[in-house]
Image 1 (cartoon, rainbow, N blue to C red):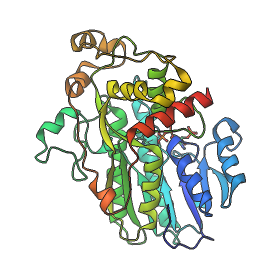
Image 2: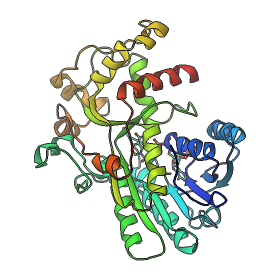
Image 3: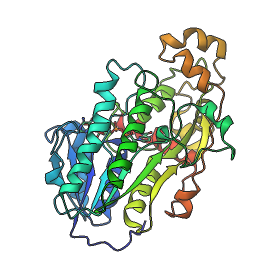
Length: 356
Ligand code: NAP
């Protein structure tokens, strides 16, 4: 991607550089010769940042690490000094059984967003903040698609359903994005652009297993769903395309508002079918992956759901409904082009096999 003109001597801050998505943004920026700063929670944690050090060594751009925690007020002041662009990506992404959703999800997402944006206000150099929100700030349940006159979710939609106990991750992202727009609209120093990706897949640079995108595909690869896959559908996009979307939003002066990022809607079973149909995966791994061939029966899922992390309310709102997403703003206004999902899934499986 050709980035538009920007003073390459100015640092660009990417928060949460150790993450699955942010690592790709850093790679692209460093490869394009930019001076990048990134915040991580612990600069000594090689497991989380060794891949970023390798990216920095390959250059030609520069990468500096700063320690910052979303919950610590003022931590982002220093790394933001002299930056015109801030890409705020750090936020906990956790699903399943969450013990304390307020502490584990809502507080870091919301207070973290406030801390980052208040630091932007204290650094007069900052002109634009690109924030990673999510499609989960756009909708909560796939069944809501039946109420959309156009048949697709778009940037006008907001998640009005999730709360602290029902889909706390979606709730945390919705609260954080709403707060970001309130803070942005109270000042004139910097503008805000939000990127709202659907479920991201594609290669991991760090190989970390604790990312939800990674663990979802690992479940398929490990045969955990071989007896059948729940009939759940979601929007899918490539992590590399989502990273590019952030950079396009950062460098396109006219970028504004929210941008939904989605290549295609797919079910878990369709993802498994892509893996099975891939000749390159077949040649390399044969039938090593015990992939599901049939859907899991809905009644069985209703029966066992609560024990495997799916509440009955979640199943009622999602099972069997295929949400559609209108991502045309990302294509027409940012100029984003989407990879075919087959490439996304095959490249992800290859990268996970490499990191195993
Ligand atoms: P990830 O790999 O789990 O990355 C999350 C990042 O946030 C990590 O760098 C993590 O730091 C950091 N973080 C979490 N809590 C923090 C805290 N208290 N203080 C400082 N940093 C903290 O997840 P990801 O998939 O890359 O997600 C990145 C962003 O994209 C999130 O905002 C997520 O909501 C959004 N998103 C992701 C997807 C997806 O499918 N992956 C889809 C839509 C939106 P550590 O490395 O120290 O844990």
